[in-house]
Image 1 (tube, rainbow, N blue to C red):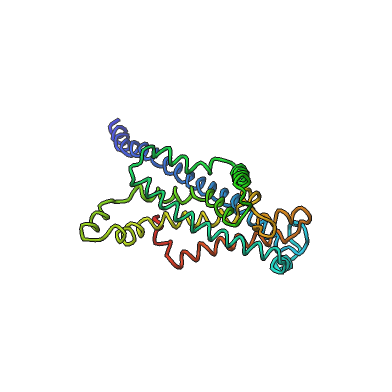
Image 2 (image 1 turned 60 degrees about the horizontal axis):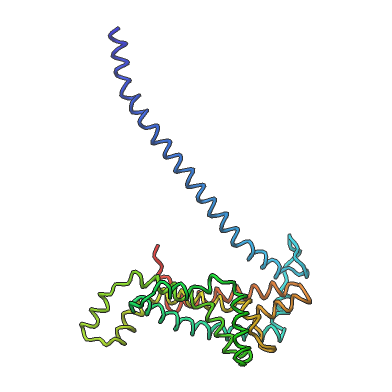
Length: 292
């Protein structure tokens, strides 16, 4: 009996250790499978987001005048037709002009408004912020209709500055929101130190404040350019004959024809958005502001 009892006693610590290790192994397996599930969900979301772009690219490169999968070949005929069209080229140039003017005005006004809201101790700040962000909550087509009726009542027609003003109204919330997000964590002691060292308020702004809020301002500017360039509902009401933006020109083209030219124009728009982001990254270094 003694050997048996000793054997049982000698095995009991190992059994206890095994029982304690079992929950740890189970938790490890759960984390392992959870990681694979998380990765699979992210890949599925990425595919869902990129699938429309892939379809547009296939449509633009397919030689047939309709969507066909798998494609029968690769052709640049639709890009040649797009760049050879005087209407499309005029619309592309006009869209770029409006987008640049909108970006400049929305960036200046949005950054200034964000600074005033964050530093001015204004009464009803939350109400003012909600009012400035309201264009994001309203359908853009209602905004375009309201602006069109306003211009009719003022009897100003549909000038280019009116279209830029409409785009600025739609893109302003992006600049305000991104700049406010940066100002939320801004250390005011840096400005106080600069002023104590004798810097004027203007010099303090350009050498201390602006470099620190630059990430939010640039992010808002990028959003403003992309949203303005691709803006359709507001432009539909505010463009004048002969000065139509690219989305409106594509809409009018779809009324009479549907071929790969639409896909080529869409690819050009996508490439332009990437060029803007890459250009800003090369000039001001957006990567240095990314916190991983």
